[in-house]
Image 1 (cartoon, helix red, strand yellow):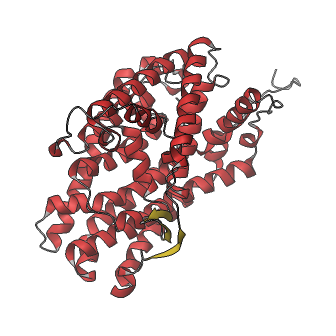
Image 2 (tube, one colour):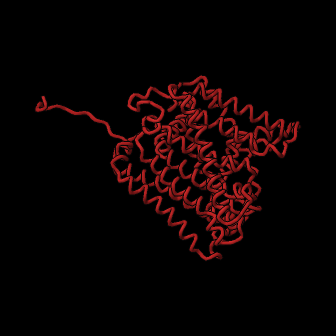
Image 3 (cartoon, one colour):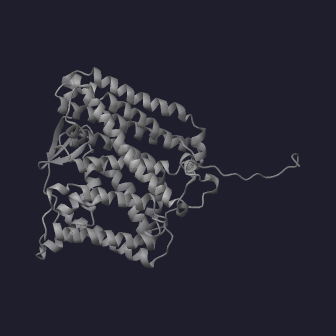
Length: 442
């Protein structure tokens, strides 16, 4: 029988090609790049270290009042998509609502925030509706208490992460429509009760978008457009509160678990055969527990690293150090967001373009995944993913050192205090690149 001629049918994909790449070299090379950055920072003259995040004024800017108009258009589009989610076809790749929420917003707008600046200010579906209510005479009913900080936003983001990572069908149009409508309604009610502070303190997406926007090299400050090294917005910002610092750490924990829960390794840990994976409904409890453990472990590991670094230089202000260094975690979370969702953006972006073209009466956009079946294109995609992870960690090292300079007042003491946190970031580089190269079964 072995000698009989026959036709063999096989399927190859991105994951198969990635396993054939020399990923071990990329993983260790990326970690070595981050380690080299740590060493170079330590050897950098103090004056240069303090001037890394200096900015330059580009031009004056107007008030930007048109953002309320675009926000109103965004709200109308969202409500139209909710109606389509409830009444239209239930294919997530052709229904407007999943494409608008999980592709346009979660993949593209989030990425744009950290690259081009605060796009969310223009497309938020919450600002314009509340502005209309204010014009009609609605005023806040209660005052936001200072002690609440961003803790409601932390809970809101954890709920969002649970929908994304634990819910059995987050892209189901009908199911998603009710979740989006409920979230939008709660947000508007929160604004009515507490005023616009609700968006800044309790609405998870606005908090996340503003946090990433401060990573962009170009930003609006004091009526002018300024440019500097990515992350300068956080280096020059006031020290965040404890709740906002924890929020930043949670973004990284959730992003990392978003990659981990798809791997063969995770499925093996929870006793699931990756070759017989029956769907998300079979791992709801495991993923919920895993998400909670990931958040707790990341916050604890970061806290231990910060505490150890401050102990090395005799600095006792742990709370202040915890809060000052937390923004340096954001570039890591942002870099992994780009890396993790790059393939999804390349594919789902085509479905989004097709949906937009269809609604505008344009021609059909042919969706192709052929580039995932070619070694050269998959190699290029993996290099972009690995580069995003490594660059995110390098920027994190630079921002962390700048914050340590403010905290300790000395370049030498800042470098010493960063040693444990640098080890944490190097290990996380290894972990992030391992996630990209790991086989997936979910």
